[in-house]
Length: 311
Image (tube, rainbow, N blue to C red; front, side, top):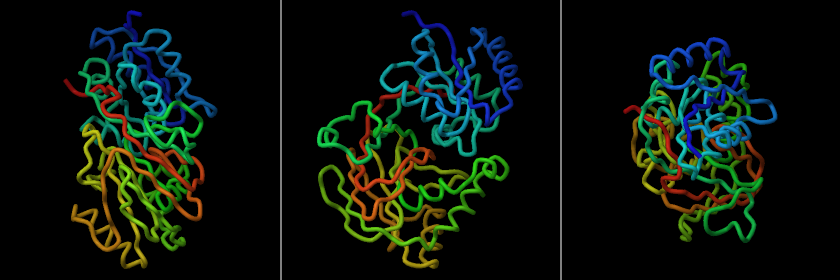
């Protein structure tokens, strides 16, 4: 199938629809490319079905205009297709674009890159929640308990912080909403953790949160996983285990200063990471809160996604 059209999967909650349409059409005219087809996400489908439909109609580029959740949904359907993902800013974090050095504050500039830029191949991560025996090895096939992430996935404190940050507050104050919600969970009880990396048991302890990253930057230049690279064929994992408010402050200072591991912050990397926890913990992928789980598997799929970057 010859692919010529551009599709934009737009989250109407995140942007002014008519203003966005006008900007996208003007960029397309200036770039001498076909005007994009804009399809909106819904409460029931944040972008998966819309992306599949765009692929079926022959789209040459599929852009995500929304938050990190919209990007994740579009990316999951584009994995392995060779059709590139265009990143249009519309959310609180815009974390994939940040980690790729993309534009996060101008729809016009980001659309120009998405419509006319070059493709870069990046890794994606997969989270398998409570995997079956068949899902414990190899790349997981599509299933209700299998979820793609391009930036980070996590459980425990990390997921609770995401869950308690209301959309309306995020839209008004941005990342401060996560700071406020995180403050509610600093004293949550720790959980038991067993961490295995590439078949090697590496950690068994009480902890507060586990974050597995395909890349390392959060926002404002804050880097949780300094060794993470988006195309190195590996996932990086941080285990955060403070026992007091003082240690929480120490972890934050260590991250902000880009310093090595310490008593309450340990980092590893690998291709296939398994986590067992007790009691079950809430988990999230790229900010989308999923469900509680006892056993989780994180596996990398190297260079499986094409993303439009500046030429």
